[in-house]
Image (cartoon, rainbow, N blue to C red; front, top):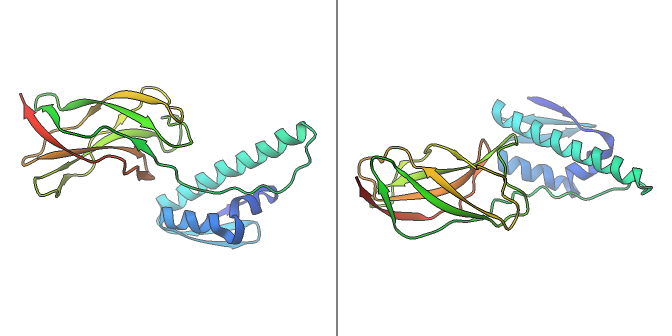
Length: 199
């Protein structure tokens, strides 16, 4: 179990109305969160507990910075509602792909449809990867190699990335290229694309 202390100014904002934000974190990270005064008691896998601790720490910092910033402008601190919501939206190309067996990589234009900037300079960096499937749609390889973004991608922005697909598994008929927030989740934005293998 991990105990996380939450600053006074951040409790209502972080917990959400009727602890909605905590319930959302529980469902996202497969943990159980209880409140005890100014502490969160988090039970789950150690890696998942660490993720909750990191997220709560980052959100607490944002609340503290916001209170200090607005107070410096003469605005009285008040209660602010904060909704913890995953925003994993992207646009990826579809259609058949020609893939070289000697150099299995393809260029992909990916567009950020979310409200947050994608970057590699965060605790759960954004990268592209691939899932290989056979002709029946069964997964042959789930976790392909990671291809980091070469630059941050702002909301509405796009970037072309040469995505390494890794060795082509025997029986591969299609590949799904997707984004991953490392250690948190896959975006689920990519669709299986039929593959034609070349030399």
